[in-house]
Length: 126
Image (cartoon, rainbow, N blue to C red; front, side, top):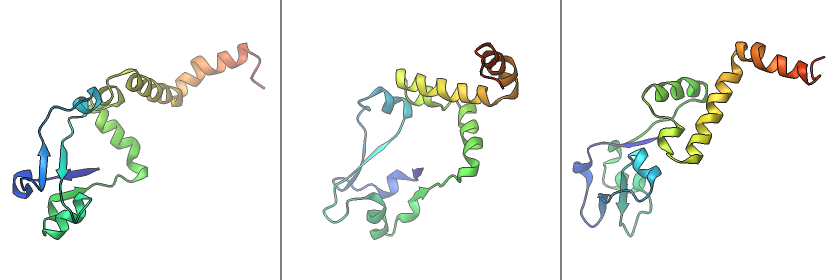
């Protein structure tokens, strides 16, 4: 994940700008992301551009270790950030349903109440 701090301190009209137009898609509106426009002939990416201006400290990168992923997703869910809220369409609803089903399926009670009886009914238990 990337974060950009103190936008007013680094913007240069005609060179590095914050796009202030409304996001064109429902997903972009739901995600509330901000977009930058870099018009540098020398730099094609923001990190190198900011480094050249000695402003790289305004750009923050966050790496979430794989072993913390479950906890991070749970924290986001508590903040009402989920596939259903980030992608307010059928795709987002399907992603959320799949995650919810996987969480439910991983619980022991689901296995005892639903999976085991279904498997027995269809002769799949040994």
